[in-house]
Amino acid sequence: MAPTSGASGATAPKKPKPMSKKNLQHFEKRLMDERKRVLKELGKYDEVFNATDQSSDGDLSSYSFHMADQGTDAMEREKAFLFASQEGRFLWHIDQALRRLYKSPETFGKCHQCGEEIAFDRLDALPHARYCIQCKQREEDAKKH
Image (cartoon, rainbow, N blue to C red; front, side, top):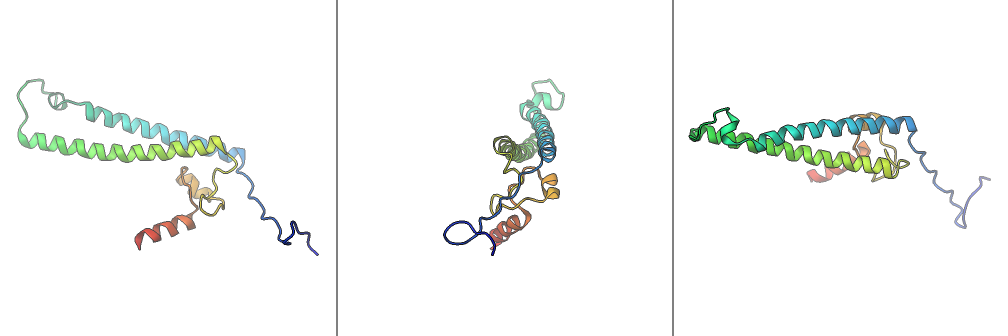
């Protein structure tokens, strides 16, 4: 007869083992590289937002632009803001993943929904992933309905 634990006779569920130190270092580097890239991109957007109308085309005269030029510049700034806000959200996700990695490395790479290990390939592509592919797919399907 197999050994059991507790009064109910059920065996304790086996705990998944933590990720290897080598893999944790790999994902830390991936996250830091992504973070550096995003910060560099956000720096480029900062230049766009801080450009004045006069300096944006190199013309230092005090005459205003043609209205079409002003409209184009406004549209470009809006587009840059949209991309910057997306990059900002991405940076937040990367920072959250780094916090998880540093705060509890034994649970990094585990799905927040089911607790199973997230596939290495998925984490390598999205090092900030919080869900395994099955749980993420269920979440996406639920949003569609």
